[in-house]
Image 1 (cartoon, protein in one colour):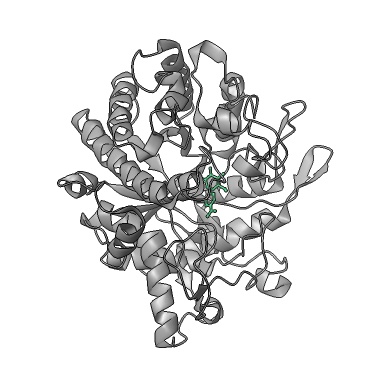
Image 2 (tube, rainbow, N blue to C red):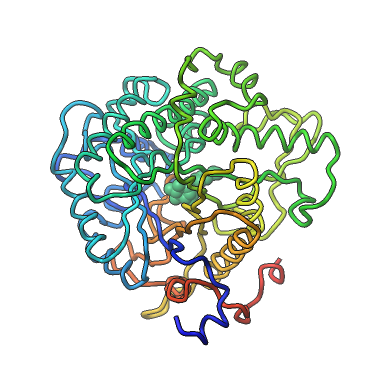
Length: 479
Ligand code: PNW
């Protein structure tokens, strides 16, 4: 960077990690290649009505065959890190038992390609594609799955640990347990609240056992990715300093305990929040939480991966039944319309990210922070060789400004990963919701850097944003 550029740049700290993320089932395709086993997403995506466009991840972005081209795109972007996930079914097709070397070969090619391009690999070991054979034995409701995960983690590290410095264990235990086992909109499509709480605990246990084996194998940085949302009243969305009634304060605290602290406290403090235990006990009993589990789950990690999309907005409303996605939320309303939304209907609140990062710094000191996912679905305008997505650029820019503000105010934020590098299989939404900074034509598999990707490349090149905002309508003006 030149001196002139520095003067105009809202700079991020030296060495700030700029990256992008994907997940195996969402991008790889090649679901039958080289001995891969069947995962719960292969099964679930075939269930009638489960996926909005009735499609599967069978082909997706064909990243399994096109990874070299995709590394080329990352290189053009100037990424310092690429977060991807490893498909357990490629490594151990039946979840436990024989190791499939051909599956590990793929990740070795990928990692070597990244390193050759100067891009740090950030593999995540579990991004929701549980081997179907393990689901048939109870899946995440069965404690044994956590031990099988540790075995699998050890296998992967034995092969790649000499080249991978940063490991991610589990992605979003809240989503995997609640959407998968509680309300059944994700694989494996089960509908039991007791199962969801058991699954959540076993996912945390898997993380802790994973930390143990990765550490023993010499991992230098370990992280867990959690989807977090600041819990706010509608009034707080516009004015964070607004005073709350005792009823609203209680509603905020209860929901925060369920969606955030249920995962943060065990990992970063070695305990479940007192506010949550009675809810777990009422719904699932406490028999699945054994002595010693919390010590295992609370093993030190180096970085916390924060996945942020939108806040959770609640207020006290006596007489309201519990929200099906949040057990124990009787008398709480979840109002939806409080800000402009993305194409997935998620309200856009960039200040939520700075609030979240500062709160984590205050309440959980000592762990570095990484925004491991942030991004948005919008409809692209394809025009010849360009893909116009001004909404996405505005989304990313406003969230990076919020991240920068948090750093200035003392948050220990080490990096930022865009969700996602590529348009991909957006789970129950199928292919119609596009999150990529690279456009993918799913008919031809042609990739085109979107305008947001060109913009992100410039941000990375100058390690910062522009001090003067380019003149485009602000989200406030759009609202
Ligand atoms: C994350 N929610 O999923 C995942 O890690 C990605 O794989 C996914 O593509 C991305 O966000 C965009 O959806 C989430 O309902 C899915 O709160 C649902 C929720 C949160 C995160």
